Each structure stands twice: as C-alpha cells, then as structure tokens.
Amino acid sequence: MQHEQQHQELLLSDLLYHFAQNPLYPAYLESSMPVVGEADAQSWHVYQGGLFELGHEQSSERFAFDNESPRHPVFLAPHRLARRLVSTDEFRQFIDDGGYQQAKLWLADGWQWRQQQAIDAPLYWRRDATGGWQEFTLYGLHPLSADAAVAHISYYEADAFARWAGKRLPTEAEWEHAAAQSSLSEHAEVLRAQCKIDADFFGQLWQWTSSSYTPYPGFQPASGAVGEYNGKFMCNNGVARQRVRYALCPRTLELSQLLLSIRSLAIQRHSSSRQRLTAMLNGPASTPCLVQATA
Image (cartoon, rainbow, N blue to C red; front, side, top):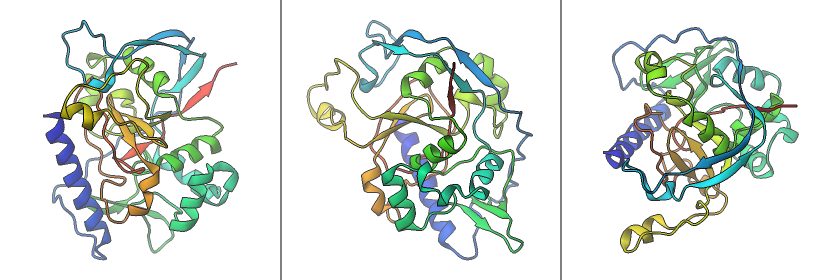
C-alpha cells in the first residue's frame, strides 16, 4: 500500500507539472479549492536536548522499513522547533527582501542552480497583472493564500529562507525526536482539517531537514534483490520528513524539466513509519520547518 501511494503521488505530480506548462492553466479538479484557515502567530517548542533513541526497535512487532533500523542513540543540543510550518506570506517577504538575489543566503550549489535556472520564486507561483502572486494547483490558477504553508520549494530554497529568517533547518534527529513526542490522537482535528497550516508532524507537506541520506550506524542491507535495491545510500542527498524518510538527490537537478517528481503535490501523511526512496532535489511538495538554537 505504501508503494502504491508513492506511485499515486507521482501521478499527481506529473499532472500538476504538465498542466502548469499549459498557458491556459487547466484545472484537474473541478471542485472548489479548500479554504485555508488563518495562520497562528509563530511560536516555538522548546527541547532541552540530551540523548535520544532514534530508529526502529528490532524487537517491536510494528511495521518498519529496513532503513529505519537499527535503533541507536543520538545526542541533541538544546533547541527550539517552530510550532507551525512557514506560510506563503512569510516566504513572500523573503522574496520581497531580495532573498533570491543575495548570494550570502545560499549554499554554493544552490546559488549556481538558482542562477542557471533563473529561479526567483517557488515553482508554481505566477505574477498576476497587478504584480501580485497567484499559485497554480490541481484546482487551477488561484490567488496565493497568505496563510497556507509554502510548498513546492527545493532544499536550496528552504535552506536560504531559514538563513534569511535567522534560523536553520532541523536535523533529521531533531525532527524525529519532536515527532516521537506527538500522537495522532492529539492531532485528530488537524487531520480532519485538510488545509490547516499548524499541522506540525501530521500535516500534508514533506518537511525539509538538513541531514544527509546516510545509513543508520550498524545498518546492514537485506540479502537478495531487496538489499541490492535498498542498500545504496548516495552522497549529496537531503532528508525530508513526513513521518517518513525521503531521500532527495541534488545532483540530478539538470533533469528537472523532465523528471516530474520535482516539487510535486504533497500527500497526506499516512503512517508513523518512514520510507526512503531516491528522488529529485525538489521532491514532493516541501516546506521549511525552522529551528532556533537556545542560549
């Protein structure tokens, strides 16, 4: 079921990308676009740090993917994690302040990519006749909702925004530690509200982390074809979180106009497990999740 959901996500990604190339901006869905609730003021979860156990417990009978093991200790420094995702209005402020023109905000690879591809906004943002912003969605072209979570941005853009905001992206371990302290029952109302921005770890967007896609200490690939397929960990990869681990490869960026898993439509989180698969740098619709170091 997990694997089939991945294929369905990519099908929607293809539709969104192809429809966005059509100058008539056709809508895939004829129903009305859901209304986004007003975003709360940003606030912070405070974590004291210390040793944290990360990974799947081998003795557990719960389902897990092979790359979620083995369980191992990780030390976390004290930090604060944003309670909600970054809004489109906050990202618009980054654009208005010249964020895409300030090399000091960008990783070297990201700055080169931005220049070569002439990137100056998220993939599906469009200027209207008055200079305002619209966003192309499966519902067609609509005015940008200021309170919605920003989506369809690359790791480079998320990292640059975080630096502009005086923050940083969380590590995989920091994100996982925070997610482990939440429960589906606590977020039941959020899950039912499809477009709530304060969905935290059970919302609808992949959330960028700063961690690379590497095996956990002690990881051993399974024997046979599964190990050959899943036992490869690649350099220059980032991990985005949606209660799953998702590998993203920046070195394939030049294929961005061909491989349509780029900045794809987000899907609702469907499991407390994580999965990894190789994808493009601008994988499923992703958003910054901010961390601020404590004093």
